[in-house]
Each structure stands twice: as C-alpha cells, then as structure tokens.
Amino acid sequence: MFGYVIPDKPNMFMKDYSLYRAYYCGLCKAIGERCGEAMRFLTNYDVTFLSLLVRGARGDKANIKSEGCILAPLKKKPVLKSDALLERIVDVNTLLAHYKCVDDVNDDRSFSKKFIDGAVIKRHYRRAEKRESELAALMERYFKEQSALEKANESSVDRVAHPFGVILKETVRSLSGESYTDSLGELSYHLGRFVYILDAIDDVESDFKKKEYNPFLVGYHYESREKFDCDRGEEIKFILYSTYNAIKDSYSNVKMISNEGVVTNVLWYGLKSRIDEILGRKCKCKKTRI
Image 1: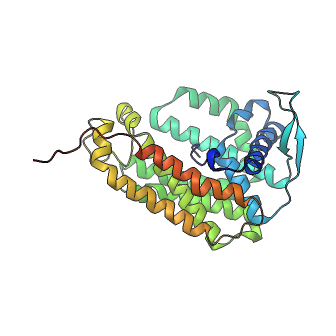
Image 2: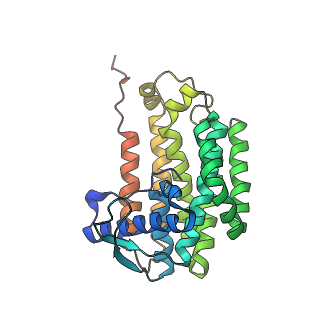
C-alpha cells in the first residue's frame, strides 16, 4: 500500500487519535519482534488502518498497555500488544512490502529498492510466504496481472486498478475469518482501487519525467501538470468521488464491533482530505470569454 489511508486529525476525537497511535506503535513493535529491528521502517499508515478495520469487524479484544519506545524509551505511551491476529498482519505487511519493491524495480530499475528487498525484506518474505501461503499465491497472481496490464500500456484505469482491489479484498477476507461480510469485501475492494488510482494521479509528473507507465498518460500529450489538471480535472474528480462514494456506501453496511470512531474518521474525512489535496492544485489555463 502507498500511505494514503490516514486519519484526518483535525476532525478526530483525542480518544480516537490515542487509539490510532496505539495501533500504529503496536504494529511497529510487532514488526520488530517478528522480523527484527531493521524491518520496523516498513511500519505504515495503511496497514495500521487494515489492523483497525479487521479487528473492529471481528470484535477481538485489543490488549493495550503503556510502554516505552526504542526512539523514546523513557516516555511511556499506549501500545497494542501483539497477538495471533497482529502477527498475521505483520506477515501481510511483509508480503506487500516485497511486491512494492518488485514493482518499483520493474518500473524504474531502482537499485535502492532492489538492494532493500534483497538484503532486508526477502528472507522475511520467504517466512511470511510459508505462513500465509494462500494469500502469498493470490498476491503473486494479481500483482503479475497488474504488471502485465501496465506493460501492455493499458489505458483503462478501472482495469489496471482492479487487481489491487482484489488483493485487498481477499486479504481482508482471510484476516476477518467468520466475521467477513460482502459489504466488508466491497469496502476493501473499492479502497484498494482508490489507493491505486490516487497514487497514479499523484505520480503523473514524475512518471512522465521518468518515462514510466501511468494510465492517465496513455494517449495523452503531456506538457505540464497545470495543463494536465485543466484538461483532465473533471474526469479525475469524477473517478475519485465515484470510488470514494462506493467506499462510503459499502461502509454504511459494515457492522463495526469496535474501533468505529477511528475507522469512520479515516474513511469519511481522511480519504476526503487526500482527494482535496489532489484536486486543490490551481489551474492556470482557464479559458477566457470572447
């Protein structure tokens, strides 16, 4: 995942923010315990949200303790203690991190990502692959499908975003167990698509400069970000809000046993803030009246 699924702190109750931080710090510590300290740099907001969503839907009790941190050992703060579910989420995080590095290497032959994957992530990926063999096989299948579409210069953003939607949906299905519902699956699928689409829009200029694939650049003569925003702004707005509304509609039918305040903040306000950031770029090519 890409770091877009984050809370909107100004619209968040302090109790919910404290809970979110406990889940974030708990994920970080669990990664260190399961994979070693070097892997803690993989702690991210998106998988923190995944942890909140799945545990909230399952209703599993969260064991939160006040503990110090490796960065601030003398200052105690709430931390979610590791359990069987969090260990599985750490493995999912490792699998996703590996495929993100593979994707970056395929896109721009990134030596740094290739080194990080080979030197740090790969051995932990192999262990996670054995423990989560079905999920690992599914991720491999759909990441390959996505890569094939990108190499074929697919122009349909819906088609190329579909594989990541399926990956997130099936990941949530596996982690949720008997608590899984169709509405939870639809929410996860549309959230996966949203992340892929938002990342593509965000990377338009850098992808153009690096001559990398981007579905919004296929068949489009790119000149500048300002002109791109003017030419395709309404289309992008429609795509983002359609996906955002699909997420909200699905979520309205999901029963959250716990963590509802945090999850609602992220899905209603956090995602909306990401859209506003993308659409907030000023257009300098307005047409004037004749």
